[in-house]
Length: 148
Image 1 (tube, rainbow, N blue to C red):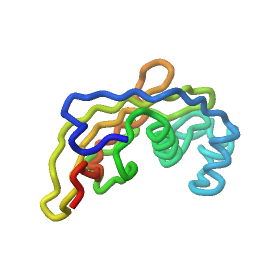
Image 2 (cartoon, helix red, strand yellow):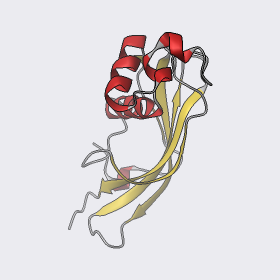
Image 3 (cartoon, rainbow, N blue to C red):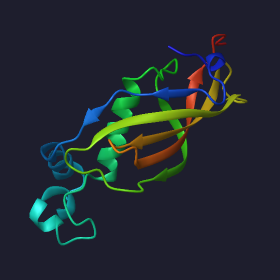
């Protein structure tokens, strides 16, 4: 577990890897984002994506899983307070192997929550070719070692 005081700008964290398959893409989409380019391989061929693509929200959920299983462990959990940026520069496809690289951008104590502060970080989810599939800049709540 990492407390606010343990974070510093420039620190980097890298997650393990996770492979995405067509069944997982379709199952997530069926429940949360049932658009044809996420649920039907044949229908997806005639869309902007030109084939089955994971929902951006599925990519976000996979990113969260990878972050949680990494060494990036803020005390109190990975609690987002605000996203400054969220991009999906390319789709996640069946067979892609994802990992997340995170960089701490800023650390600051909270003015209104004694014993807490904020860690601003950029997390880039990359496929097996090192191409970004999601970029998110988040402000996370972190506990201080000296909680009041």
